[in-house]
Every structure is written in structure tokens, then in C-alpha cells.
Image (cartoon, rainbow, N blue to C red; front, side, top):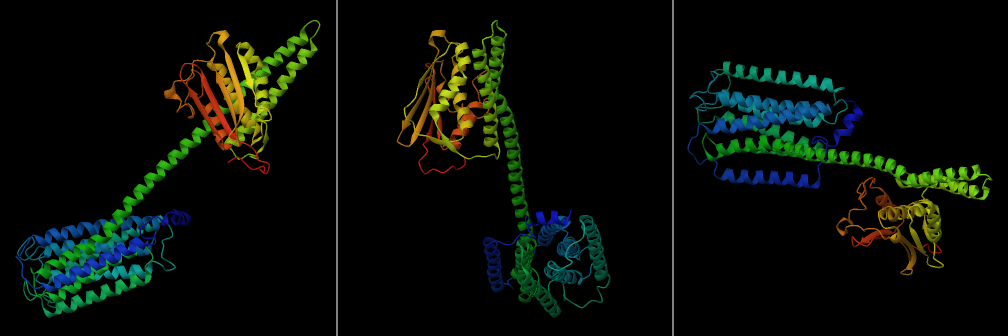
Length: 535
């Protein structure tokens, strides 16, 4: 992974995401709860409670699992972010997880009266001191390393190798320390006078761990820059409370002794909970991103299909006109004598249809791309007449009577002439196709224009076909929805898109028996309307 790749993903990780106001308040609240629990525990610290030999294995097994999972998650982030500081912190968590195993096995009464591994009376005490010194020491090193100049490994491969050697080193260190303390049990200073009573030295060693926790907490507070820093501060604070509590208890199995272990669980768990919460957040974010990418892909495919289908749909009619009129022109020329007037008229219609093809391509480019979208003053009456004229051959071949009612002195609208011509052409062709199976005498296609509400112009196209099922009216404008056997389902969808881009509205109505009425309404062009763009 390159440096640019690392910077691209850095903002999504707990170790690199700046804390929000909510995160700051949550961490302060967590420390407040720990402080209140400490004050409450101090008041009853030396009240004896029934001994429970199963308490230590249960609690410390929980701490082992949480510290180990935290270390694994931090090592995972390290392999991506390549941060040397994360290596130190993850190694600290791995160290505590492994030394918890040694401490638990050696603890008197947990699995054997004098503990396992051949441990002596002082073994668990010194393992506990080292355990609670190593964690804040790792946190302090993390705090001062994370923003230094050489804080990253050069490659992800180097980071992964560092993880391997770090894990191996930590494992060997814990094994060596455990063996050394057990072997030197007779010679190490006394922390325990017997299995339940602490020596005075235990207070000083606890003070050493308190000092280490204080230094770690202050370092993190001064150099905090991420959500991980904030929750690590809470973990260090819990450890600080845990070690301070040792100064208020005189032996095992008291309220204070049990509460010390519970503070240890809090210290072990808090960062893991934050990491798991962040993992779930990232999972949700990743799932949402994947869904968005799939929608974008589908939209791109839909747009590509729409463009291709629209081209085929829209140029079919003018190409048909070109072919039929050109063929008719050739026939007129080949007659004896040649009918030059009719041939010239046919070829003129072919030329006009070819210009329509060019307009259609312009309209499609503007609709789906970033072409010139400037609006021009448009006379809808003229567009209706031009489209009706271009469809004369089809109207005649289908024996359809067209009735045109145009409002006189109709105001102009602002728009793209090619696109509006396309809308009128689509609506008239749909009416023609709807009447294909009707009795010849009943085939009537009506086109009307009207001035509405002083600021709108309406164009209505009504056929005398079988109509549209009212239950289907809401869906006929959706892309790729069609009621025709060979339809593409794009014509009406594109018509509505064009009309809405022009600031208007296209609607349909039918009783399902007596034909269908399609009507679009556009705002008129005011005298001070500039030539703006279609949006």
C-alpha cells in the first residue's frame, strides 16, 4: 500500500479519526463514573468478604480475552496504517494478555493451593507489578511516538514483519520474566507476608505503578489527537484507580480487593469496546458504500441502455420517413414523363426528416450529457404543425383523421426545440399505435393547444383507441415500463424527463375504454426571460 493509499484510508480508523464532541463527553463521563466508583469503594475497602478461589480465574480469563482481542485489532490497524506507535501499543496489550496467563496460573488458590508453575509466595505480586507497569509504559511510548517524523514503516510488508517479530519478542519476554521470577522467588523483595497480607513494600510498588499511569495519562492528554487516544486515556485512568485502590486495602478477599479486579476489567475492556464499536461503524459505512456503488453502477447501465434505446426509438420515425419519401421520389422521377414536382416535394420531406435526425441527436446529447442547454423562444403551435406534417404518410397509411385545434396568438415558451418536437412526436406516435386495431371510421387523433392560468401553455394529444387501464397510469412514465408488445418503455419516460427539465408537467388520463389523453403544460416565456439553461 502506497503512502497515498494510507492517507486515503487514514480518516476512517479509530487511531486517526479526530474525536467528536460526543466522544469527548463520553470519555469524560466514563472517567467520572470510575472516579465515583473509586470513592464508593474506598469507604468500604477493608470490609472482609467471603473468599472465592474461582473469582481470579474467571475475572482474569475475561481480561486475557479482551486484551488479546484488543492487541489483534490494533495489530490489524498497524498493518494498514504502518504506525510504529500502534506497534508499541498493540505490543503492550499483548504483553498484558500473556502475563495475565502467568499471573493466573501462579495465583495461590486459583488452580492449586500454592499455585501452578512451581510459583512461590512472591511470584504473583511481582508479576502484578510488572503487568501494571508495562501497560502505562506502552501507552506513554505510544503517545510520544505517534506524531514523530519516523512514525511509519516504509511499506506494509515491513509493518507485517514488525508485527511478527514484536509478537515473538513479547511472548519470549513474558516467558523469561515468569521463569526468572519463579526461579528467584527466595531472593526477590517481599511483597506478601503470607497468602492474604501485603507487606509495606507493596504500597511502594503500587505507588510506582500509579506514577507510571499518571505519566501515561498526562502524555495522552497533552498529545491527544484521535478517538483511540481518548479511550486509551479512560483505560489508563481505570488502571490508575485500580493501583491507587491497592493503597487502601490490607489483604485479600475484602471489598477493596475485589473492586481492584473490577477496575482492572474496566481498564482491559474500554478500548476493546471502542474498537468493536468502530468496527461496526466501519462495517455499516462499507455496506452503505457498496450499496451506493451498486446503485451508481446500475444507474450508469440504465443511462447507457436508455441512451441506446432512445436513439433507436427516436430516429426510427424520421429514418422511416427518409426511406419512404426517397423511394416515392425515385418512383416519381422514373415515371414517363417524370413527375418532377411530386418528386421534389418527396425529396424535400426526406431532407426535412434528415434534419430531424440531427435535432434528435442534439436533444439526446443535451438530455443525457453536457451539451449546449441554452433555451430559446419556442412557438408550440408551429411545432405541432411541423410534427403533424412530418407524420402525414403514417396518418394516411393508418387511415387516421387528425384534428388540430390551435389557440390563436399563443405566447412563446422557453425551451429546446428539438426536445419539445420529440415530445410532441412521441405523443402523436403513441396515439397512432394505440388506434392500430380500431375500426377505420373511428380513428381520430386530436391535438389542441391552449393558454392556461395566464402564465402556462397546455398541449393535449387525445386518441380514440382502447385507452389505458387506470391502474397502470401511475407506472407508464417509468423507464422500461411499457404496455406495448414491442415497446422499449422509454418514450414516455423521456417525454416526462424533457418536460420536467423545462419546468413543466406531463400527465395522462384514461377511463380504460374511450382512448387516452396526454397533456403537458409549460410556463410561458416572459418578456425579460433570458436565454438560460435547462436544469
